[in-house]
Image 1 (cartoon, rainbow, N blue to C red):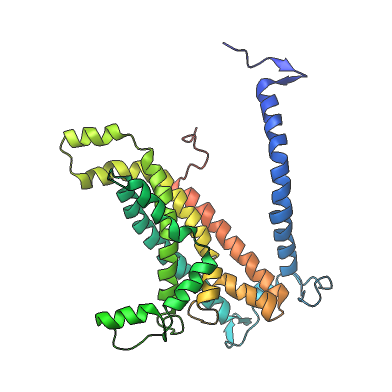
Image 2 (cartoon, rainbow, N blue to C red; image 1 turned 30 degrees about the horizontal axis):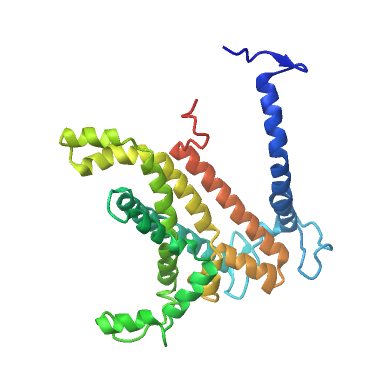
Length: 319
């Protein structure tokens, strides 16, 4: 048996491996610092100043005024503990949370169903697996524009089909109507992202030993009971990681909403309203504060989800 305690230059073999791993990771860590950590730090700093887009380097430090004294936009004034609260921001927070919860729930359920179907043995399974990924492979901007044409109230194919089937009696402006705008965004997002969830869940299903199903079949266990007692617990780690990835993407949704319903208060999310303040309204510091809050919300959510769900990201079984 090899002696792992031998030294070379005063370092043991495990220490040498750790040092080698660090130098291999150093370029990637430096790149992450340049493209992620540094911009994030600058955003946090801008949120503590009165910086404007026309004067990026002349802002003065004002502390947490951008967080505590929410400046009112065109949507009106709301008084909370003596300070002006921006109702447009809290409407965007509610829209984002509602969109994330509904979309991730639907995509997880549908993705699980699709993954179970794709995991079964049938002729042409490889072709179906490739075809199911097409919606996910299409760029979000392209799919959003495509669906905006399909949902158009004048020439959209969705209204034409529903009218022919007798489901509706008049054309509906799906993306312009306040009552249907969020449903339209959810429809497009579920259509596009369900294949992603199915792919991750399918990877977990592929790791389940086939012998377990054979034993359950021989013992006469009902397939539904096998699913809840065997399949679901075994794919739980993959399922929870998939939900984490999808929830992170849903909470920062921007491009889909920006293309489908750019000016609708019913679908405006935190990312969209932060971009408006950063660019359109020249409230750069206020937009930076909103972006920082979005980052904080994402961080808290991931930490709570990992802690409450006992997600093993290291893959060592908690050792």
